[in-house]
Length: 402
Image 1 (cartoon, rainbow, N blue to C red):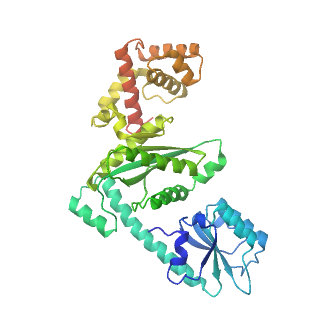
Image 2 (image 1 turned 60 degrees about the vertical axis):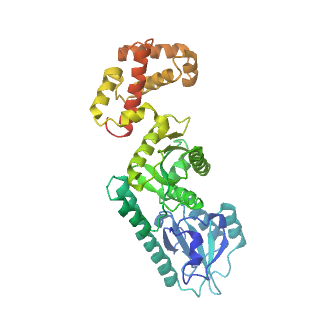
Image 3 (image 1 turned 30 degrees about the vertical axis):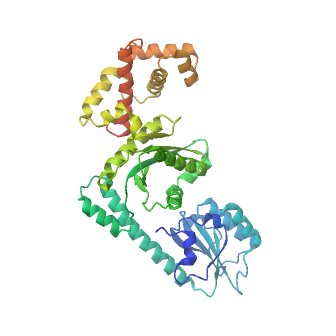
């Protein structure tokens, strides 16, 4: 299990620590304990710490405690533990408790009689043990994701040893986010990886999903148990996306969902399918979510092992635009894609791109000149559309580089 704020009073020997405020934030992941000895903690924390305040070396006033709580919130600290007794901090100010409740930030009260050496030892041991189990599970799933071919019987035995539930069937989910560049605050929040891990882990915990979050390059990978291959699978995926978008309103979140699989031996194939679907979601932000079944002919392209044949097809049809990443080439390929997606309807294409129809006509003439294709020819339009899809697939799978 992951150690969360709600688990702290339940750990052996820590029963006298009381949850005083911010119960809505009880699911925050505790990465490590930290004892605050300075007025400001910013230079010494990375996020996810459970911060302890003793008041022994630094007298803490009501205003300084509230300022510390704001600092904890700004730096994604897991929670704040305040030691109380007759000598130093006698009581926790009501203003701090009210602020913690307002911000859904966990605040605990610990009696001075409970020794800090005991508290930090118990919490650290629990975190280390959790990390060891988590590493074993991650290694197990990572081996499956990378295609190591263990016998099905060994895979089932290992999953039982790790305390993982048996699966009737499952899908793999791949998630990726991008931040609105104009929102500096949102960007700084997302620079701390534990925030995304916490949001996704919270979601899995609420759904009683014991499988951990994996990271593959910049993608988050989830193993999602499902009962059947019906519409419920898509409904659940959309609910996940909505919850994450609600928690990260300044970010764009994309999702790819694999087909349904029945054996953990197929986990690697499921992840590949989910990531392929995710790449298309990133290229079609108006949808945000793609199922692998929706990729159509691209599933056939992905199954072709001779990637050079696909690259040759792109080169033959896109010519000078093929694999070009300069701004003008990107603009022309986006125009061509919109034109083809709107079945050659000029007015609809111009409105979708937000440009004048004359501008669109000029771009289309330039595309015909660079590709040596006639956009009036249905067969050539089909080849161009497939070439754009293949180029996108090759780029996103890092087969072709700049």
